[in-house]
Image (cartoon, one colour):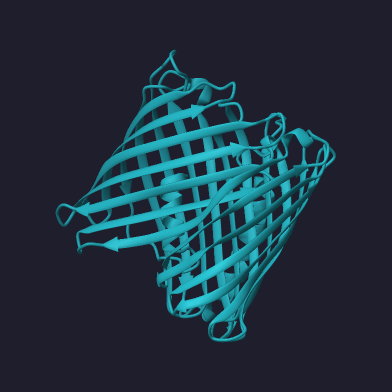
Length: 434
């Protein structure tokens, strides 16, 4: 499925929702914007020693339409941009980004959601550190039904793909149905159960994957905001090169001080077994955490932190590298200096371990940045930003450091509606990690 097919499908869905727009009687808004960004990097090719600086200009327009009422919402955003390099004209390119989010609540206890994000871009690959043109897409439809005060179940289906213009080992498509349930036997004891099946097909390799994943947590409520848990997770991946099994018992706690923040922290042993590569069988400690918290020190001063750990049969950013263990954390501090001028400090750390036999690769990336945002008029804003990147790897790629700066000008007639299907955490992580 290519860009034109996806765009036609979304346009059809958009017309259907538009015809049914009386259901969205509260707010409707169409918001265009224009952004021009000047970018400088001192290490365009991201190498250790042979650094080459480069300037580029990005011309971007955006079209955003939203409808929202108390129970339902629909948002569609389309943002094409053209990147023009000063010296390296062979990398000049058009890029496209489209996203759609819809929420429908047919009854008090049932919610239906749909989201899809499509990107066509010239971007740098994780596996080879080269610029490649490709299409990525992730779409998810889900249903959640609540059948008790704290009891609910959800069903979802995700389809994702990565298609390259030039044949590439990382090209894939994945289908993943999943289910989740939270149930409390008594006010103090409960469980949650999570399960999924995924089928991943590669364009070049014949070593397609079929993966069953599941985990079970027994919960003990310590107080209304704090649960202790004992957990067991199991992953089975069937592949031509040899089946891969992961066993992961753990213990920890889940603290939710507010509805939109919390800390889940635990630890356990991650056992891995490879059918045809027993030399790569391993036992290791795995720290599982899922953290998100906003600190509002004052009306001017805020700090947001986020972090998580995970492992999966593939990384969608480099699917050919196989089984991946990932840790990531980040923060964003904003301070409003004046009514129209704000400053920010931000930082992220990412550790990716590609633990597949023969691959055995570890990447560490540190990003630190600062910026100023000035909005002299309601429809006009300027953004000045700087980022330092330090990348270290034990693969055949080179370590590198990069200093990057940009200044952008944005014109928009009004503030777009805020989608209630994208949480403040999603907005923060898109800002920090994408």
